[in-house]
Length: 179
Image (cartoon, rainbow, N blue to C red; front, side, top):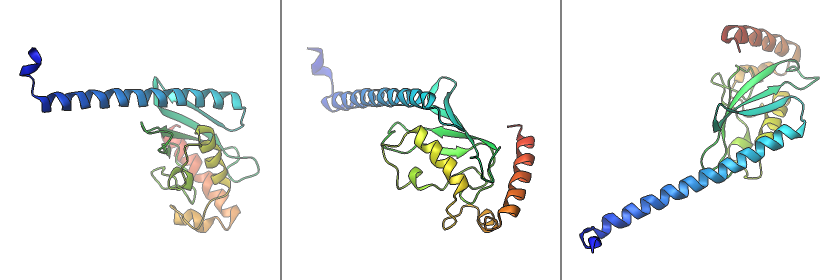
């Protein structure tokens, strides 16, 4: 009989709130499972020059590493990236940014990356491995039609000058930040 003293509107909104919380927890659980599976796949892949691991105990924040590909101006350079996964992952793209400053036509001074698969071309079929390989490929093959760094895009035409600028900035910035 205690239910007679309960406001039906309040009771239904409380039930809806509880349902949403359970739904969000279930979604986070399934995202967590997906991310654990991706971590295992990445570790077992044997891909050269890419790696990523969760930051401490937070499965939704990862630190990735990309080595510049052989026979490119980025060869011998190593970059750290942050990957943050939304609760809607894999249906929503993660936020990926360079932590190590990166002189590149498609990377701005804040580490933001202009890459279609991280924006409008995102697909739930992509995974962390695909993202890292795509960024590694982007380093060697920028899209100069859509530069975030116009100076780098302009300099790209002269690979000797570009490489000189890239390596000078990398050395200076990595030493300053001790990355």
